[in-house]
Length: 327
Ligand code: SF4
Image (cartoon, rainbow, N blue to C red; front, side, top):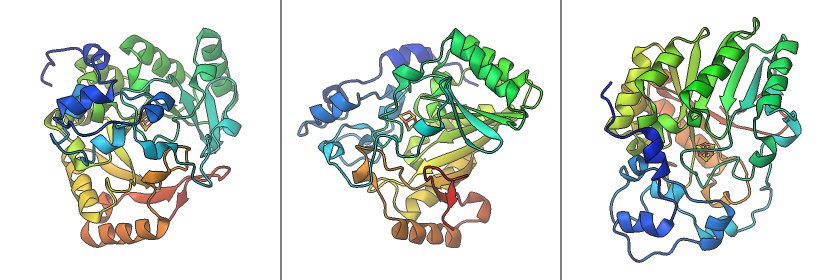
């Protein structure tokens, strides 16, 4: 792939962290972001993501995903700090074990971008931080549970780890005989495509086990040329690429937008996988799309797209044995 002129670490360090700077970059003068919302959950937006936003448009669907807003302070009923029961399924060692056959491994609390609707925006990452001792116990846990066949590297965003650390974790998991696949949940190919370096692609494509990379893209405008190039480079090395989206009010709650997204993803070698109803995390209620509306949108997608481009409409309910299929 085309070499990037700056390293991903440089771009990450220069990410917008002040709403006023991002708004100035977008030539938006007449708006003040909520300081209280920002204090509750910091803003972070890499330049490559901001560059996909429309200048001068406060209602840009990408800007709305990342700009702190006073609506985050509204207390909605049935919203909580632990929307999907992560904490009760968390072992002390960075493992969330909810479902049969697979576990989530919290490898880092950091993300390249802070999405205002994030279901883990209230997650106690500081208490769950991975260290050498915890890593030993995680690997022991995986060894001891022979029914675990898939490890999902999650976070935060696992691609925020440096190459050496990521390779080490992949190698350690792959060395356990009953593990058959490694899945990586990441928004980084979409929001910081410079991270998809040749070296990272080599690590993933040379792993001892198949790697499934699940991206998180919500809107076709997120698929910049650089994102397309990054995804195609991964695809070329036979990395399985899937995408999950969150249905977000006034951002992508529209069949036409989602249809364009599915087609755009396919052109990058990525298959749509899940379309999630919003998880009811405190601070995110203003993004909710009602289930009835979601079903109508999904029906339109089914009418207009071939089946392999229609993501499964799901919601996650604490304590359930899997995600709940809504259709
Ligand atoms: S990248 Fe994922 S985990 Fe990170 S803030 Fe966004 S939705 Fe949450």
